[in-house]
Image 1 (cartoon, rainbow, N blue to C red):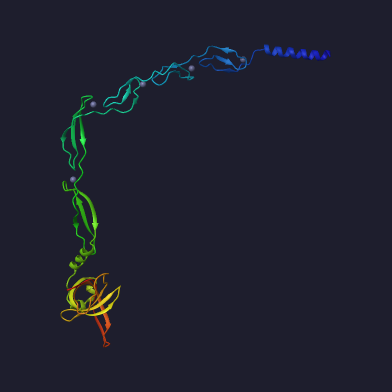
Image 2: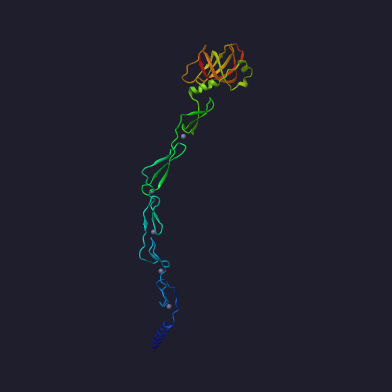
Length: 293
Ligand SMILES: [Zn+2]
Ligand SMILES: [Zn+2]
Ligand SMILES: [Zn+2]
Ligand SMILES: [Zn+2]
Ligand SMILES: [Zn+2]
């Protein structure tokens, strides 16, 4: 029992002497509001640093630039009202709000007339600030003409046409156009030439694809169907040409003894066997248009 008590005594003496011995401080550096302080024993050294104040501005109160602590209120902007040319502006920090009012002109005087090629100008005095204001007047719209043909279309080739401004002459629209219906037929007919029968019969390849026109009498309807009709047509000098023709829907039939004008393309020669069994070769024309005379 006595031994136990003596051990306890030693322990108490030991711990007491430890507490009395100097603390191995663990310092936290001084802040704005606290001096340098030991985290273990709470001992301090020196003074708190004190705040480093930045003065209040329009939008921010007085603030410590080290710890961020603030004091009081922001000052608020000192607004100067908007004018014709300047937006509402703070006289202290220069911040703006909204947009300028713009001049207010009650009476304009036209100093230059606008046209379709040049803008005009007008002048007036601002009733708010008294300034003379010069303003542009927008160009006028062009005045469109009807279509004018700049390149005539032919039977095979598209032409070109334009609309221009009747005031200034500027080209406003250009497009290609093609002939249709009767116009197309007339163009083809006008492009056809008369050729001598003998020339074609002698040298058919040279004329192949040429646009030809001739008069004659249908002496035989060789075939007649939806896709292609064919005829033998006799010229005034009794020469005969073989004619194929895709008769348009709705057009009347062609009959023997009809006097016709044929417009078409030379297509070389055509051979057939006569009733007597003879091989006959005559010029061939693919007709595009056939008019009865
Ligand atoms: Zn300490
Ligand atoms: Zn501070
Ligand atoms: Zn301000
Ligand atoms: Zn003004
Ligand atoms: Zn114009």
